[in-house]
Image (cartoon, rainbow, N blue to C red):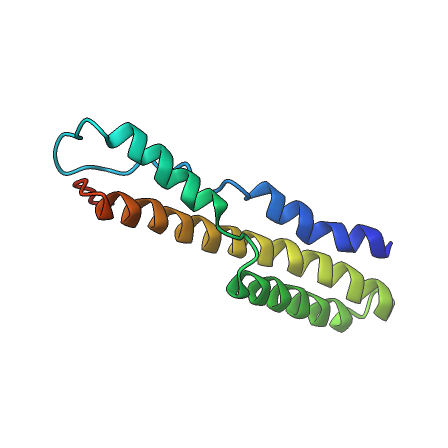
Length: 123
């Protein structure tokens, strides 16, 4: 059972490992001749950034803690079952929030990288 719970954050984070790095930015004018190569470089840079940032870890921990507390408060199940079910639900919820954090951070890396290379990126 412990192994199952340990795998949940790993699976959640693996699902979002490339999230945001494949962002296709909007340009304000026509792209230049190096845009495609620069986009590929910037997307690779974004994808190489660690998924498990301190903010991601905090989000997952908060989700698991809140879920566990809610599970403990449920009178219909034993405290161990409530804790386990609540922690799983919290990790899933926290994982969804963490995925959005990762997506936003990687998207921002792609956009800023292209801007730094002189491309007219608006978002």
